Length: 254
Image (cartoon, rainbow, N blue to C red; front, top):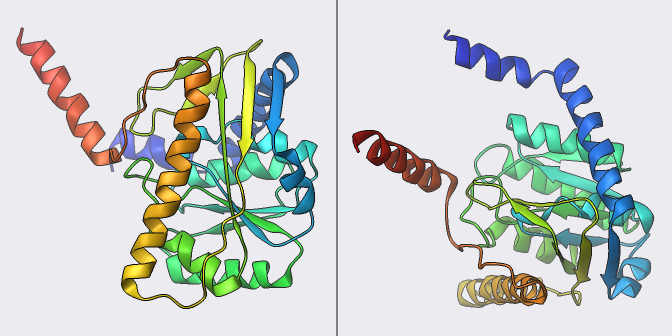
């Protein structure tokens, strides 16, 4: 076992992840407190405060959701991937009041997570938070799992996104947006989307494309407010890493 593997395994332990999660929670609260935050359509959050709903956001726009949901007392469970980053995110969301974490992706534990999530939604008193393009992309592309949660539970999908005046876009596949302190932050809560319980395969694909379009339009419209650059769609984590390797190789050959 090489040192890199040991290091990654070490970072995945709870005894390491909890202090890191606490540190990030403090930083996020600091940003939230120092920023001027405007929530559009906040009446929707109030309406579904104690109701069943599926709150969705692109993987790269998750930073400011946690404090906003905490401020509006949203009863939430988080859907997280089983990898190291997913477990870290689940711990962070728990610090912001998420009552439970459900672990699973399309590739690992997906059916178990789906059953658990649907049971929670069917109770009718809390929402599930998920990133439909995570954990590895393609960026800003909804995966099938989101629609299964919605059609099996009857719960509405509520798209949420944020932008800010002082952004730091991380150099990664999802161009994760970090809001810097003393920013102007706009959070948009989209109109709830209901998915029919019965659909043909063609209707299923059309609905997925519709949600894609709604969430992308939501992000583009917000970013236009501060003239931010267009984040690339459809990029996978593996493709991004390969692209970075090629760039480093070209740089070294010069």
